[in-house]
Image (cartoon, rainbow, N blue to C red):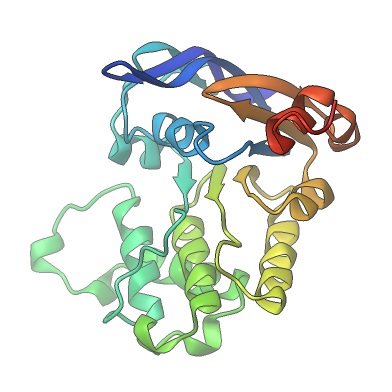
Length: 249
């Protein structure tokens, strides 16, 4: 059963069409990857799904509910969380505080915030600790984010997304800029989360995509050109042409 769908989704910026007539169906509990060359429209698609941009055309359905045009803060409350291409954390905050903010922001109520200390929200604190544990960073909970490595900051960003208690986790190039060892660690984390969450993944490292994906959608110049299981995508001549510029027929 599809938990997240798009129907003829499009986004234009003036004369530039970044996403064109994209129809996706993301099955609940699956790991569905979105791949394509630079400029294919992948991140714009994520921005549409998470409410950063409103679509120009088409619809977005979540659990069968039309959420087209819903703003980003409401999308997070509905159960969709994302990470970004570039690390996006509060460097002076501790790891715990970074994750606690996300847990608190998606809690059911902020009532009484100005009269209560952070310690008065035990549910947010527990979610923050669990998210840090899930990515292997709980022992460094009190360390400032600026004091950890780039790879650990990418893990922290994943913990921030998990603290929002999502049903759908959208990961935009989680292995970007990582060393081989850090990449292996991130892939292991994604594998560990697979099945617990529905995961939509953007990643340029094709070996990662082929090893973790249940299904792959391929974008090129804003449009979908192929979709299927990894083995089928590997053999697809349109995909090979998109990546190799016509060298592979």
